Image (cartoon, rainbow, N blue to C red; front, top):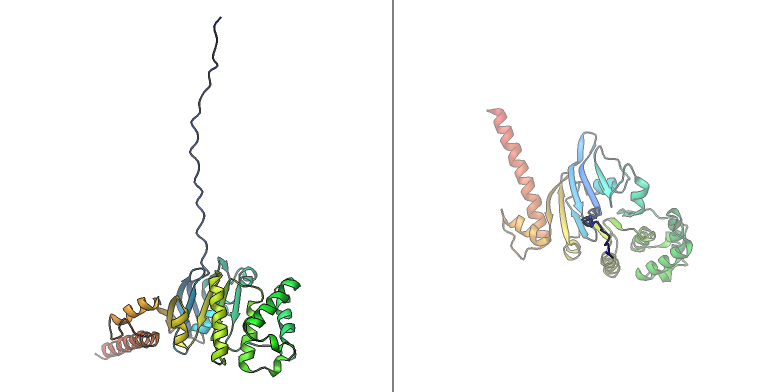
Length: 289
């Protein structure tokens, strides 16, 4: 008796498909941003990309376009041309999604003087639809961190400027944003209060959040920022770590490897001014020949 062995066709196993996860969107992506007021350009074709989890300083002389840029990013101004994305969300076309991920603290924040600190934070949390028990826990944590817990029975109208600035920061953080845009956050703070704010900001970055800071206190930017962008006349003229900016400044001038950020900043902005002045002089000379 013959035993028949069934034939089985062997199908080569298919090559497993490799799934490549898309690159996560940066915390902030600005492309070709333009904004002018009455024919004068405040922001001129500005590009800036900031990765997630970075402490980034945006520096520039008065009138350079820093605040205008940040107000566009925060959705408070509309750009004439260009786009700004917060974690992949276009602030102009998808403002609700973008703003939920964002905190913006202006240099002179508006607070409601007839409220007490907890009432103010409860109000702000409600605007973001933060669940009440979560909001209460966050409010206490923030007020304790910023040394305002002992002032919860007082009305905001009696607060000093430094206390108001710290409370405004707490309000900006109450919905736990992933990206923080801070315009001169140390205005009006004494040394102790400034340290409290800096420690809080560093802790946020350790947790994976992103901070974009403008300040005229260059020592603060030097100590805290991982990368620095310098803006002048509405354009980014230099960007990098402090060491990279030192190299850039030293290429055509005197700052050395131990130069402070102030030395580097003044050198780079003066170089740009001198180049533009020379260009205007040359053009004027050519026009008269």
